[in-house]
Length: 307
Image (cartoon, one colour):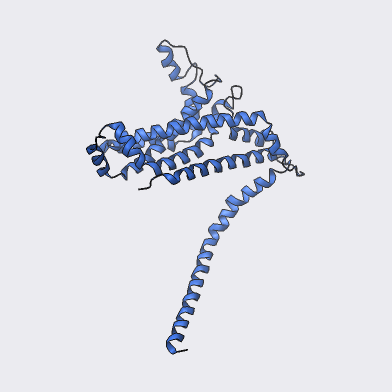
């Protein structure tokens, strides 16, 4: 072997050792974050999954494995089916309306000049507030006897509306609160997306005859906001599925179970009936539903144009 080849081999060996040392150092720096992820996220999920196969009750010192019994009980539980359907209805209303209204508000606010910041702050205020506080406020606002909304309805000559004690509309009243809470956040996200749309596209569309509001919306704005729309839809769906606060504060699942949702049923099973094994099975099913919805929306986003 020549001296040149020897030098190249030595250099290659040093490079490999440095690369290995760098990889090991990267793993070392990532270790605390990985450990925290395991302790805070993965370990609790594994424990919940394990408990879902037992008859464990909160505070019990003895329990035994029951296999798939808790999951079989879920399938035959009318309360779970009712909670699932109520949650699905709530999510459908909240996601569709909050995404649509968030987009329209973003388009209207986008070109307001100096007042844009003011509108952003006003519409974002509900997002910065806790749902418990908002629930108490809306419980008063929509009260059938002393609420300002019903006072206006009565002043106009219409009969008062019992928003939270009517099984036919109670879930929609809660959904209206959910939309009001989410629409400001969605508006901010859409505003960020609108900022990235080149003005040249609107000028080109105007040359082609698409100079009206609706033409620009459906031919330029919304197609270019495809990635933002997918992200907003996913985040809104996850947030809507976590509906609990307003149910716990306002309706307590009533009237007649018309507003009972999955997380409220989970809360009852865990902390009122102390059926921890059953509640864990319910939690696992909830996580599976959330993962399935997210995966469907992510795969649907593959055909979306990213500029």
